[in-house]
Image 1 (cartoon, rainbow, N blue to C red):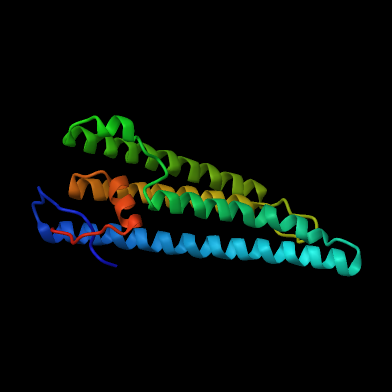
Image 2 (cartoon, one colour):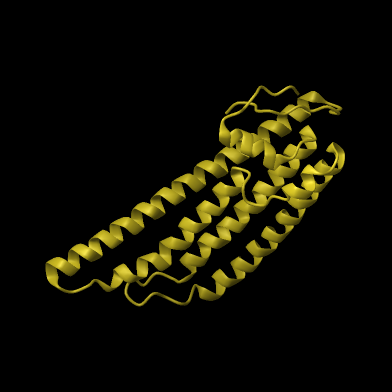
Length: 197
C-alpha cells in the first residue's frame, strides 16, 4: 500500500491526517481485495457448475437439477463484487458534468454531498437487506437445501461495502479537498503520486 495523489492543505495535525489517509487507503485495499476474491470465486463456481451440467447431460443424457440452482446462489455475489470494484475504481457514482463546471471548493462540497448521500442510502439498503435475509432464512432451494438468503446476502454485503467505500470517499475528500472519485480513477489508471501530508 502506497500513499497516492493527496495533499492535506489545512490539516491542524499532519500526523492525524496521515493516519486518516492510511486508514482510508487500508480500508479501500481490503474492500478491493475482498471483492476481487469474491468475484473470482463466484465466476469459477458458475463456470464449474455449468461445465458439470453440460458434461452430465452429455454423459448420462440427464441434467442435474442442482446446476440450475447454482446461478441463483452465485450470480448475486458476482454482481455485488463488480458493483464494489466499480466504486473502488471511481466509476460507480459520478456527477462529473456539474462538478467540472464548479470552482474547486464547491466541487469538493458537491463530492462530499454525493458521498454522504450514497453512504446513507447504502447503509439503509444494508439494513433492509438484513431484514430480507432474516425472512428468507427459512426458505430453501429444493435440491441443494441452501437458504435462499444466500443470494440476498451478496447484495446486502455489496451495499455494506459501498457504504463503507463512500465513507472512505468522504475521508479522502476531507483530507485532500479533491474529489475522491477522481483520486480513485487515478489510482485505478496507475497515475499515482506521493502523498504530502
